[in-house]
Length: 86
View (cartoon, rainbow, N blue to C red):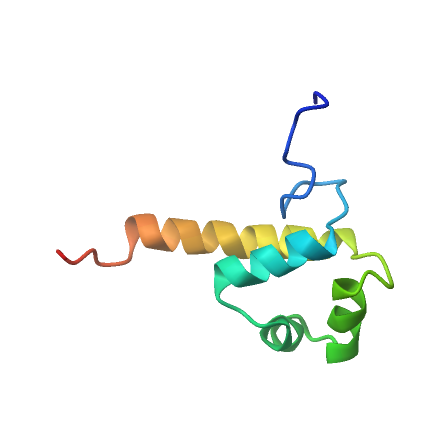
């Protein structure tokens, strides 16, 4: 990867740690609140709060999980969702 690569923060990039900003962006793109994520992932709400404040590093699995959810959302929009004329 080059120094100009901008995918370091993108959810789902194996081996890359996620920043609090990328975590919030992924949640926003999914239309989720942090509480939605913690419920779906089976973790306590305080954990996500500490990630968002940068108090503890975000584990690699979080980026992989959110990346997978974003990909499912993208595939659903492309192949399943009904597109209605405006």
